[in-house]
Image 1 (tube, rainbow, N blue to C red):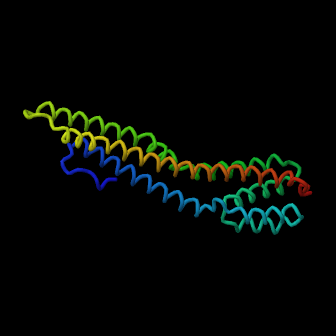
Image 2 (cartoon, rainbow, N blue to C red):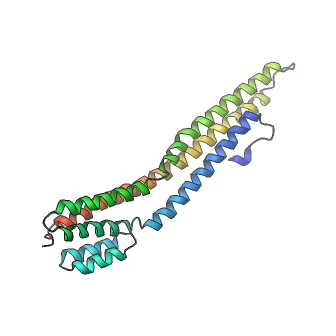
Image 3 (spheres, rainbow, N blue to C red):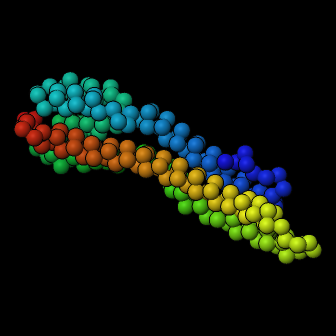
Length: 213
């Protein structure tokens, strides 16, 4: 997209293209950061949580806690919290649930970090593109009005094409940022629902399987 930028652009239009390029770099940077963060946090690693829950619900609490403490996933940390609370106060399941929800909230806050940057790109990129188009159109018609010669439609068309390029670039960047944000938010929502499920399962048992104790 940016390799089609004409060399004779007005300074303001060129500044719009630079801003759009910066937004595209920001989108790529945030996407890479979030992927690395999710990998480091263990987002989406659910198999280990299933093993831990099986141990917990089948009367192997020590083994379950050992695996949860050694786990490197979001769900492992949530399960470690709920199990430690349930064992510390066996008659007060609300205590274990509250501990787990505190850990879950902390994990969700981390997963949601930098997401607003993508939302900002989705909103800003089309507006910047439109601004570049308006400026380009003003420049094209301004040059036409100052021309002493008969208007050449090809020159006017070239100016309009250049102006519309910023809108196309802005929309393209916004679409990419939107789909990246939607995919990341989908993973966060999936992890949130799974955390709710494992907390409930650890306290109340699974469907068809009684709770521990």
